[in-house]
Length: 143
Image (cartoon, rainbow, N blue to C red; front, side, top):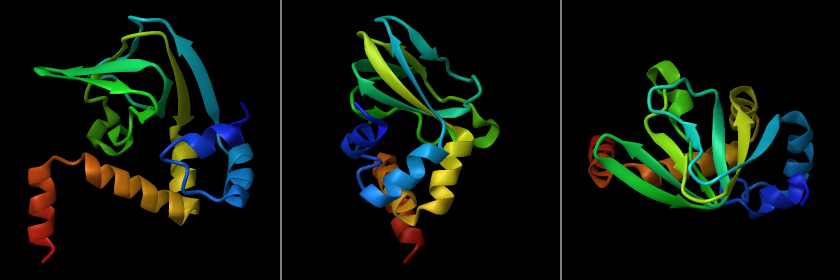
């Protein structure tokens, strides 16, 4: 599957036009990795240097008493690049053989800065990941 075909199927990138994708793909650094069941992708507190997209498989995200399972396709690392210290908030471990796509920090920031449609899609997805009480507080504050 080409990078173009892959991006058109991923929820975060499906907002970009064919023309945008054709211009964008050669300018960004992408890495792909297949990992076996049980493989630890990253640990809580380690430095985050890239966005991680789960293309195939299932991954558990654990932090303290919080434990949830994420199924592909899903954006695993989505806000850590903007956290103080850029540290991972969860430990991620493959729960079956999985395929991953990595977008390095420089490339991700390039996409956010240069493609307003991508920025809007990213912000929309991040708002939906906020806990309900946070969304309520933001709504009340902005009134």
